[in-house]
Length: 99
Image 1: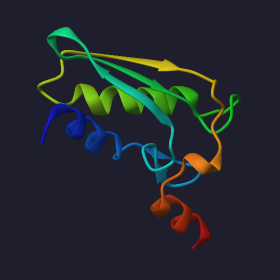
Image 2 (image 1 turned 60 degrees about the horizontal axis):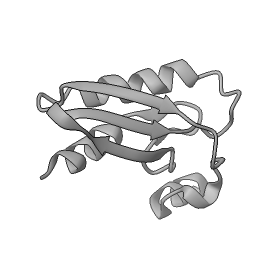
Image 3 (image 1 turned 120 degrees about the horizontal axis):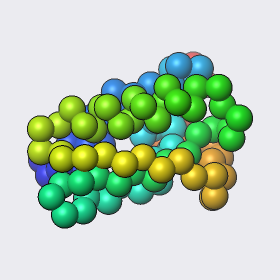
């Protein structure tokens, strides 16, 4: 498993508490860039700009990736463009929401 796959696997442990779905399946992760010395840059969004769980979710993303011993440093950038929409969700997430 390469480092990007390990990072995605770790990110699946970060759950949006309101929807009870992980940030990867929700489609909140826009970009993962592994730079020199295994410094990781993650660009992500939230379902709404005014989400009260902003700090909790972004901290969860940072700490879950930093947990990997191969990773040196993690930077998380919250972006709002393009705006998140339900079309970004995985089939598994859509199925979970439909119950």
